[in-house]
Image (cartoon, helix red, strand yellow):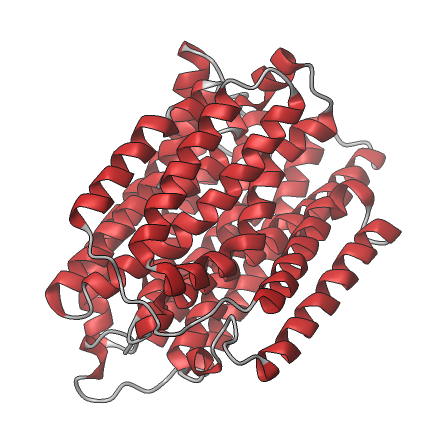
Amino acid sequence: MLVFASVTILNVALPDLRTDLSLTAGTTRWVVTLYSLVFGMLILLGGRLGDVLGLRSCLVGGLVGFSAASVLGGLAANAELLLLARALQGGAGALVAATAVSLMSVTFPAGRDRALAFAVLGVVMGVGTPGSLLLGGLLVDLLSWRWCLLVNVPLALLAAVGVQLFAPPGERRAGARVDVAGAALAGLGLAAVVGGLDRATAWGWSDARTLGLLLGGAVALAGFALALRRATDPLIPPHLLRRRTRSLGYLAAFFVGVAMFAGMFVLTVFLQVAHDRSPTEIGIAFVPFMLGAVAITWVLPALRASVSSSSVLALGLAAAGGAVLTLALLSARSTYATGVLPAMVLLGVGGTIVMITAADLATADAGGDSGVAGSMVNSAQQLGAGLGTALLTSVMTTTTHAELTGGAEPVAAAVAGYARSGLVGGTIVILAACLVWAMRAQPRPGAATRPGA
């Protein structure tokens, strides 16, 4: 929860942060972007380090590093120190995210305890995003933007002590090594693609810098794919992709990233522009997201016992896609109950279904490769989030500009952009749900109750 809340908790603090440190608009954007960029760049390497050095050791080290980076950011006196802290937070966060779920998976390999553990994970993930927005709003309104970073320190250290005292060390792969060349290609490729997608809106899709980043990232990732065949101990062992349900989990995580991050972005700016809500009010507005996520965790085990997990993935994608599709109905007269609430609930339900199921499928029976298997879920979601936010922001900006040119009022023009982006994004995710359903593995008697079924 600490790692994923840190993606969004500073969003509501950006105006105060920018004023306090006299940041430019571009630097302010990098405060949010740099965390996600470094996180996406290092997530696969973090998973492999967990497999080689031990999941518990890497998780504790990541939590301590995350705490130290949060202190640096919370006390930063200038933009340079703040950006360095956010980069370090992203790197430490990648190590935590890559090992936490994997350690949980090997601790509870099967049975009722595993189902309960993943149900708790669903609650934590559901609380993370809306909780971070609400907490961030309260901290900014009552204290200072700096506490959006400093609040991590005691929580991360407490978690580190608890993990060290009570968690098992996790399985290590005997004789395993880190594929340094593969890690470099994967990290640079992911960073270039995520960075290119993020900057596409500001620079334009046809700008040479955007195209250079996207093309360079694609070349690096292609080189990484080729290097996997020749590496003695590849960063992503090929056997992880041979199970259909695991591969479908990665695919679903990618497209639910498109839906969740783009959908939450549109909902946030709609509440700011059309309803003029304060940071704390926006946090409260996201509570139905949390309630939907928490509620579905109690239904999910029974659902997965009834149908194949790949069908459950398709259902989760359909719910998330439906959430984004409802944004196509937004207008300047839309109320919270009619324009925001349905999308909030469906995003919480669909996102939780996909991420919990995908994490379970990815780490089940992965053995000494659990770290990298679990980290690939987060990596897929991160890429989807970058693509979805960039694509929908581009659609939003183009539509709003066209509406303003046609004489529309500023608020009406902005809301028209939100609606068009919802139509495009929802359609893409619904089509992805159809693809996952068409590729689903047929359940065998009794298979649905086993991990990874």
